[in-house]
Length: 398
Picture 1 (spheres, rainbow, N blue to C red):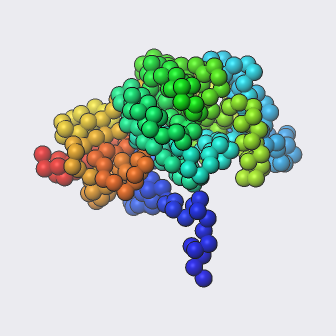
Picture 2: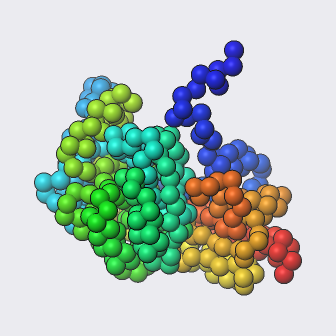
């Protein structure tokens, strides 16, 4: 029997994330990977987690191992809300739910909002997980180019004038994945202005916002929103550990209600033990001191990667200069193909993410590629980027 003929219209056109496919190549011994989007595992608070988990299982094991409520473990949910209010992101009357990673929040909101054929605007480049989520609900995707200070709002407005079916705009406003770009305050205000004018909602995905290591803070779009148009997604993955699968979402009560019902059909509730460990950690230890350490390490690694690129890459290959987060984005001159470059780099045991993985048209050729600086060691960064420089010079003939 050909089971593929029975697949739903929602998923039969989806393809596996090319980033995940690259991971299959990383089992090769000695490979240096800049392809992942993961934090540095050496920074996970493993010792503290072990002590906390033991304490919880000995003293609160019945609660930790029992079913929990869909909205999330109440103490962690309340702590998260209080932190977001203290940061000026939420108002005191806003609500928060805990989800199984920020990705689930995007999926639950999309399941609650998107009908087949609804228009979703995405930054180009953008996060493959968001793009595939919207594809799975048969949305019509529209890409708008990124500028140095965020999405091109003039191009966005021209698009909005041409298409009346646009319901959502998806933005990673701070330390964008994959570009590392942070949207300016002017662009954030303009997005809200356009959302009011053309009646669409904004997904603000902010998993990296706590990881600023240079520059000045910029208010979130959510903090500027006075009419409830912004659905806000955050994550503990980048500040604690991604394997815990903890994220959070804030939106108008009517939408959160729908998302909670949808979550009940997906996983019933987020892992209770993980939620309890996270809560105990953020209340027993200083989360701000922990984040300060992450910022210091990632800032140092990012600077080292950029300095090595400036030294070893051809002058015609440009890169972004992030002020935080986990990624920077490189652009070769027009006419070069980052997938072909990746094949040559893998021969030298170095991996990265080609730009095609981050685009709506993932069959086209792009001269761009994403580099992650958080996971590799400093020694691997120098060695790997130096090797990439050699491959680039050879591939480009310069």
